[in-house]
Length: 131
Image (cartoon, rainbow, N blue to C red; front, side, top):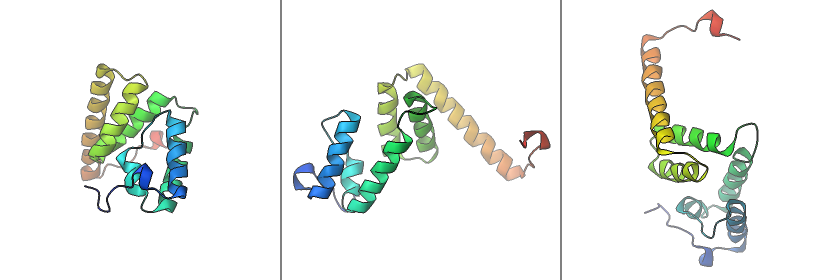
């Protein structure tokens, strides 16, 4: 259970409902997930976080699937089970196949392994990598 519980739509004050409404409209959904319901105990954090995510995940130089897969990769690395579930669902909705997921996890695993090796060995950066 969330530390402070969850703020359901029916119980939300107007400022929280406004953010909930924007989330549902932007994501074209009829429900609010538990992450937002937990953040709703602090309306300023809820609004700030939603505005940032909305801006970052909006169409840009990277397509929506790529953004969701990056988010999923970082979530796996940070071992955030909730975020892994959320962004796996979003990536699948954006077109990620089982094969793409498996390959992504292979890349994440390899990157984490080699990152730890480089850190442990304190490998200096090659001059040719400095651009």
